Image (tube, rainbow, N blue to C red):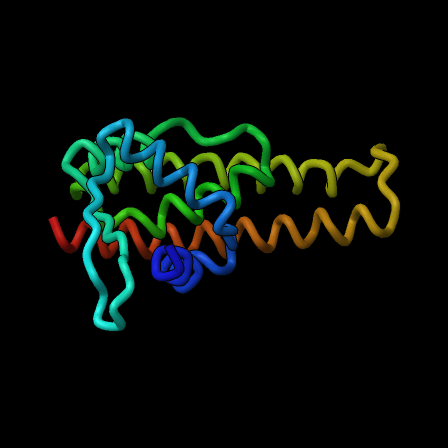
Length: 158
């Protein structure tokens, strides 16, 4: 369990930090659904350890989750799309293309919405709201640039 937690933290630390209390039931659910297999073995230190492996069905479920529709909530979108992109190596070239297009399109829409609010002189936005909106425009612009780079890299691998 410690190794699973450590591996998740090593890869996804900016996005999540799962507790043992969350991991144990999650691993049991994944196993019950056929997405993981587990086997018990004695470790080098003489302790009984559980080793987990993802199944083909688990990889297919991961692909399905990565490719499902993105959130209409900008905060959820930003967090979830970064996680999905970080897992994109399990996708085919065509699936990556679909993911990148979806992410880029949604990010462009959120960027445009923030720009429109900033440009609308009749909106009653205060100084702090303007700073946050301006930062959102910058974040989405940077994110779009990253995704465009990933699209080019993916096209070169096809």
